[in-house]
Image (cartoon, rainbow, N blue to C red; front, side):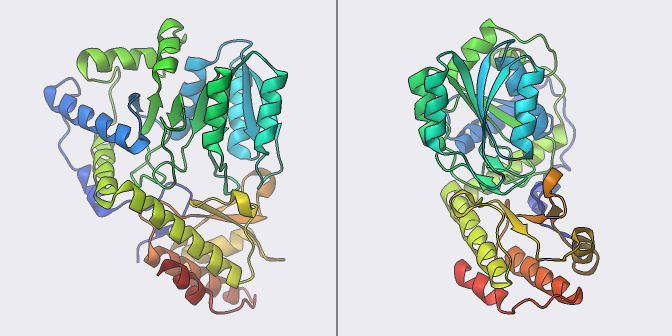
Amino acid sequence: MEYLVMLPGPTNVPNRVMNAMLAPVINHRSEDFRVLYRSIIEKTQKLFQTQSDVILLSSSGTGAVESSVVNLIRKGDKVVIPVNGEFSTRLADLIDSWGGQSIRIESPYGENPSYDEFEEVFDEHKDIKALYVVYNETSTGTTIRYMDKLGDLCGRKNAFYIADSVSILGGDELPVDKWNIDICVTASQKAIAAPPGVSPISVSPKAKKYIQENPAPILYFNLKRYFKYYSEHFETPFTPALPLCYAYDEALNLIFEEGLENRIKRHRKCADAFYEGLGAMGLTPYAKPDARSNVVIAVNYLEGVDDKKFRDLLSNEFKVLVAGGFGNLKGRVFRIGSMGEVNKYHVVRTLSAIESAFRMMGIDVPSGSINKAISKLN
């Protein structure tokens, strides 16, 4: 039996996408590559729902996030960022280490700050350059549900708006242009359901102008260089991960065959099913109700459950992989990646394995979780 990869990334990859990597290696300075790359960029723009420039980095999502910082932020720049988990903390630390001045709007893990707090910070500081937001905090299963209002706020205050959407784009709403997002970052191995290693970035005309007039003192992640190579040659400045480009292209094909709206609905249904089924076992979500993610389900452990023993049991006996908690959540929660090609089979098999694993550990959980979950999938 193959592993069922229910991690918050990398996720299960459809066979069609894996097989696409068997395509022959081509010259990345050839017309063959230019045709492929133009096609990928156009499809990615459609996925992001943007008319803006799109850049494809051969890197992890973290590399793309770092690129957004080093190309836009300069010494002393004030940057607002909500902090409520591991990845938003890392991003705030990155901004500070690059010389920016992060203004952190902190809230308890599992919760989001109120929108009014952003208004207050912008009113207090008249020289804010940018707002960075981790749209989906992977470490806590928390999603910000007022991204559109933050875009309006940045527009009124003439601040750049940057969305770290690594773990959510392709699995939930994200109309980049409609929400006034200047830089949007994601990665291939999450809701897009491709192998890791490709990280697309969209850059608005406003952000592009700034980046071109104020080039970053770096080489590989220098976005100005990527703009130049694409506009002049329809190429990347450095050798791209060609097999991953083929896989990413095929993953995009699958997304549009299903339809983006249908895909988002499927993710929402599967999330509802997970929350319902886990709740039937007596488990509670870590995130507050108004902040719960549709792509990362973070769940509090029942009293006395050993994290490693539980996840090892799932892996070894049932071939189901889920993730543990980060930092001070280690041992307190486990996380399910409900993203990518997730469907009824993934939900039912995962819940069945979790229920059985608890019973094997001597924990009496109520039965009926599968039926509860299925009621949300029909």
